[in-house]
Length: 192
Ligand SMILES: Cc1cc2nc3c(=O)[nH]c(=O)nc-3n(C[C@H](O)[C@H](O)[C@H](O)COP(=O)(O)O)c2cc1C
Image (tube, rainbow, N blue to C red; front, side, top):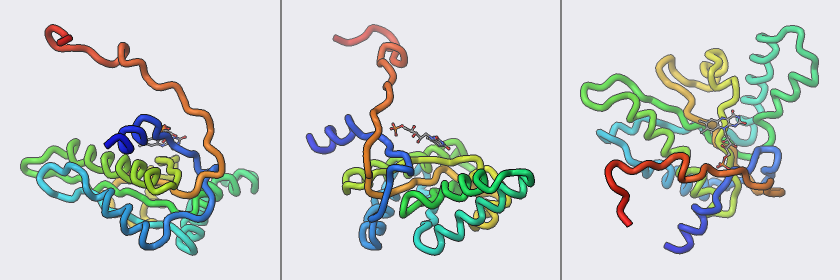
């Protein structure tokens, strides 16, 4: 319990430029995805799924992003295209968490989307507990229909996040966290 609290108190993201090999191996990845799937899910709809990018798949995905960027910006300089390609070439393993939220007779789509967010968070926490660093990003291309098509997302699916995972080469300084006084109120009298 104490270990869990210590981890959660200090957990933070490690940006992809500080994530190197090794990333999680096949066994660790199975563990991570199993843990990530263990989230609250109103109606047990499993309104999310995973796509793993590593090895050749990661290289191909990076090329998809580079081509989409070039199509959007025909005048882009080669180094700008390289910069965009490189977004998926830093962390050795990237897990796309895909939201499958859809209209349902009882369960609001909002709740299904929140469940996908919980999946992303579980992945970050579990990865750090395993000794890896992680970062939850979307970037512009998570909203580019052509890129989503190439990644295999259907018209009704959305990218909840790309979770970049690897071994931290350095851990940048933490950022400020919100002061509780700014975000907490009590309905009725505060209990002492
Ligand atoms: C859904 C979602 C998408 C995000 N996408 C980006 C992004 O595209 N680019 C970025 O710089 N940060 C993005 N972030 C923020 C990063 O995850 C950021 O590094 C993180 O908030 C750092 O906080 P932490 O150390 O508490 O994890 C995103 C966060 C969320 C929740």
